[in-house]
Image (tube, rainbow, N blue to C red; front, top):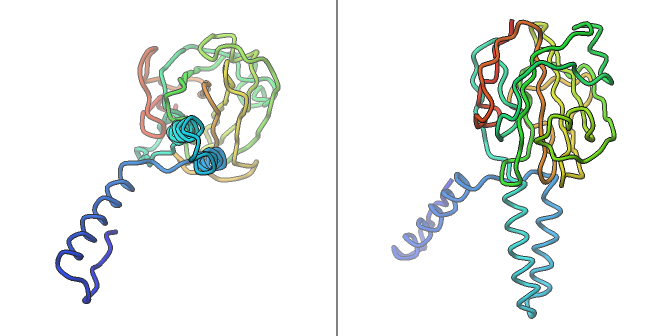
Length: 245
């Protein structure tokens, strides 16, 4: 909200203050905040730029790196659709796979889905995409499972099985089960998950992030209706991936 002028200010000072307030409001509305996981990195680079201000190479390198990391760790506000029975995209990116597959074994989904394959949509995140992950549904975290692995390029089909990953089993408020898997990529070396088993989360709520190139797989219950295709761009928390049975 713009600052209110004080009675002691001259008209010129009031106009200047109002203009500055409008600029601040414009920045707040259009520049996304930085995710907490990225703030130490951005602040560290900004501090390096200040400390190295007498050395142009250090100053400008650190400043550009801070701006780049600020853009990478951005967490823009999103408004998920409220239609019941839908699953929204857990991440910004490009649809790399639409197929059927068996969810990660470490989650133990055989107890609800059996041994067969279920519908899956994979979203590939380039280094330019927003890298926070958002819950595709409103529900409860039933189980979390981390699996160490390789760092193949995240756009390869084999990445789902061979790469480092963090899997989350969600149960919606009306009893549907889903799985969301954060998969590290060729450059990614850090998966962040900020929710715990038993926690209730909202549709579109940020729950984690993967640093520097990655992929997110979503597994749906049998007979779900997938609404996207390979090559389509997704907006995390807003693009509808599927309708539940």
